Length: 228
Image 1 (cartoon, one colour):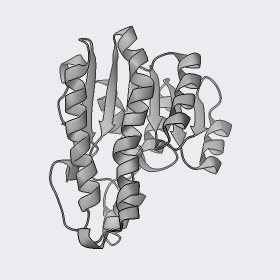
Image 2: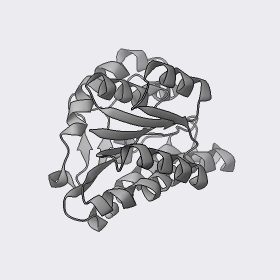
Image 3: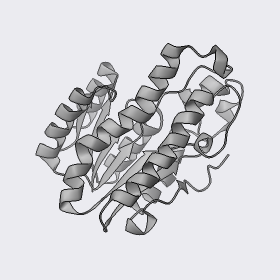
Image 4: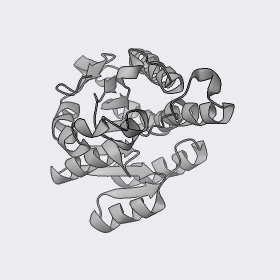
């Protein structure tokens, strides 16, 4: 399978990319950290490809997609994983700048990637778009209102996209569950380490994602065993 993943330089994205590669799939990934991308390139040569891309910049995303589509064709799976968590605080204490950054990455970044890759998938008539949601895209908690808002938006955006796709394709909002990542440590610094690690999660999430198909179009999904 040919798989495109955003946000591969750490956390769930990195763990997923490593699992897919180890299991014989071709991965094209992006992330904002240049040094981490260089490490990926050094470790995983062609046909895999990794680029430093800020998903909030449409022109950069478009140029990246042109390179990827030119080398590997439309992806079988497009995984929008890149995401940003706000610093925990009551909503009225979250600055306009921080709110804007969370929205830009978590919503606009996803739409930029969809705009760049999905037309080629639609033209081919197959492929699965997986947009990483969250338990906080289906419920809410104090001090993470910006993150909740964006993940609720991803749920709605993905379900609407599902209505627009041709038969044979799927768009799925996927909640990964609760995993010990830098993002979780931002919210729960004292207890995050008690949750499963990203590598452990990827061993179940990888096969789960590969099992998604047209019959799952528009269905909110969660990686079993990692629910809150």
